[in-house]
Image 1 (cartoon, one colour):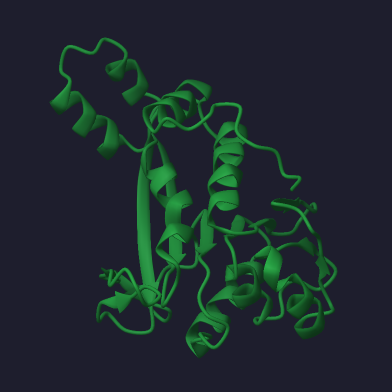
Image 2: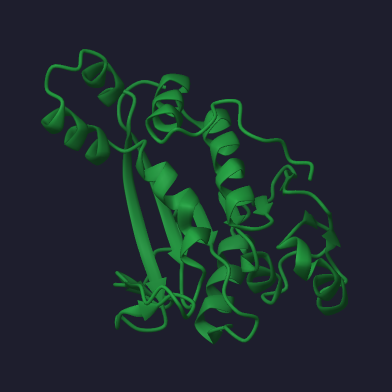
Length: 225
């Protein structure tokens, strides 16, 4: 990859486990904005400027029911400021990312957005933890191989038998002419999944920089438990 490739992500984050958003933060490390900040802090580092030429021109849309700050699951008391609602977020993003909320969190507008995104038959739908169940609630997993938090797999099979639920840390379902699905188990399985995705999709040098700067194993862990 050469130049600054545009890449856009819509992130569903209402009432989610904050650690489920790790993949978004990991991908943010591949952005021009992140490398520019690194150059400002380490102006004498010779490897940063070449990396900048390979970085992503990244846009992240934080999507919720309203533009009021959203809360993560109780405990950490963290909030996120949305940039869009489900009705205003662009559909022509490269990735729809859905983190894991409690099972009663299913904003109606979110389900319609998921259906429209998958109906376009392009891009990446990536979920972490119970975000897989959120996506399944939109009826878009029929006949597809997917996963979710390992403890929720029995419930997933009962609630959404139309999908093929797989007991793995993450699952990739690629079909010609369809939206590609990357779904993971719990939060840290999602982080490993995102590192594998990044190595497949983006500059090797950029991804190695991202993983090493975060002390994350470049080899990572596999998809099997």
